[in-house]
Image 1 (tube, helix red, strand yellow):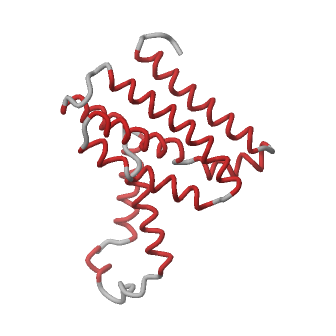
Image 2 (tube, rainbow, N blue to C red; image 1 turned 90 degrees about the vertical axis):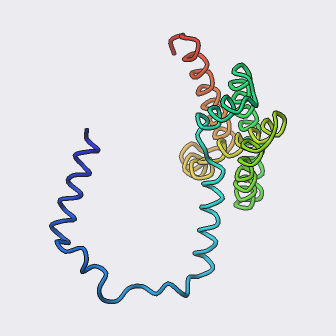
Image 3 (cartoon, rainbow, N blue to C red; image 1 turned 135 degrees about the vertical axis):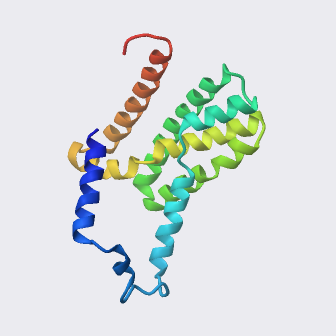
Length: 183
């Protein structure tokens, strides 16, 4: 309800500030040429990052409808990919401390490659794709949080331990929810 009211308020503000939207097209506009190398690098990074993120619900729907994996294997694949993501997060965290940004770029490129394996492959290719998906899931927000927590909490190891515990807690909560236990 709040989001609907906020959307209506935004429409009213836009209508008051711009009563004739057709006039917005008149006059000078920014030139479409001359975009910098940094812009295209940022666009490429955003596209790769977005390619590596996808909801597991969509993946599990595909797996169940295409009969690539039985219903019993779908949550197992999620557990395997989450565990692999946690391990990758620990390894990438240690490498990030030494190397820096290039390891984040490598993790994003790895996770961007998951979808052909998951959506076009057989069982074992799907399993490999889910490992890549786990890498993307685990690294999607870690570097930004790491810099903030490292300065606040005073330790890189503490960051990794917190990340592992958070991921394990999420996995346990999901497992308990599926089996009807209270969290």
